[in-house]
Image (cartoon, rainbow, N blue to C red; front, side):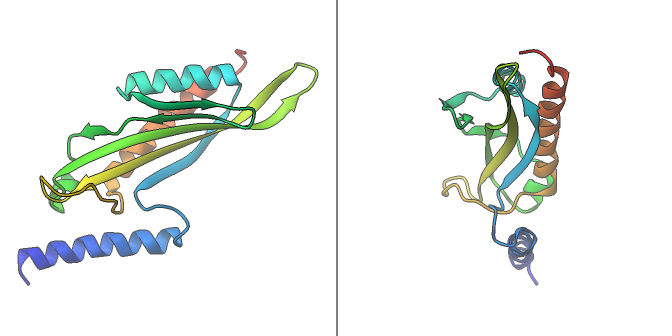
Length: 162
């Protein structure tokens, strides 16, 4: 087998494993997890701190009675070693932070929100190619897990401040 065939098989394997492990119900280029609970005030403050800390720019913010939603602009990243190994040429990521009402404390007049973190990745396999979605590499998953953990810890540290 030549080098191109081996790389093609690696990419195909990543895609196949991603599809099998997700059962087809979630996107393979996405890392999502529920990171905790927060008041509206704490969610907004923690979200702003996270986006500032990692230099993400807000593209869209929505606030309704049913949810609060932050979506960032796509941001260019340096490649991780495992992305270079499969000849990814460029990477962009964005974050989606969402809070949905969980419980309302009628005596206190405040709501608690369930907070979800989502990180998405797009890649280019050649310098002038289209941005595509492929299964996230292990190092990219670790990157998003670190961001989610930072968000989770910031939310926990702010519990009680309304």
